Image (cartoon, rainbow, N blue to C red; front, side, top):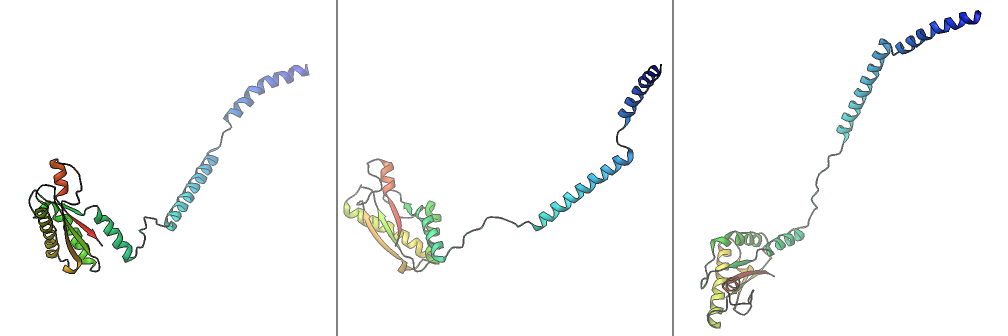
Length: 188
């Protein structure tokens, strides 16, 4: 009988213990303490992030220090991509389309008085050799005059005419002829 009383007591106590165990979560004080701890941890993380930003080294692109000779060489290389002035058929006047190119060369030569340039005059294969030599010289002198007016010293420039002797493009098409009617600035 004693056993029955214990068994009945267990049967009644088991659901009560289960209900108490399910209800046993954190108390209001424990929840408040946990919230405070999280807030403190977040505030500390923000403080450390702000401190890291304040101490952070600013980075950016660094341009290399170039000597004046290196700068001049780089400028000259840029000018080499634009060293040709083209002329119309049987003409020796500089076309306005090429003023910007010649202005760049003039600025470079004026800034570097020790630098010299040879201005080559060229023609297409039409016309007599004598006529083409004369026309090539007129074309080269036309470029020289433009550069003189832009401030380049006479001592920095030499003029030479090749006439039709050194074609840029071989052929008898109008496109080939147009490529051969030119003035070329060659730096020394």
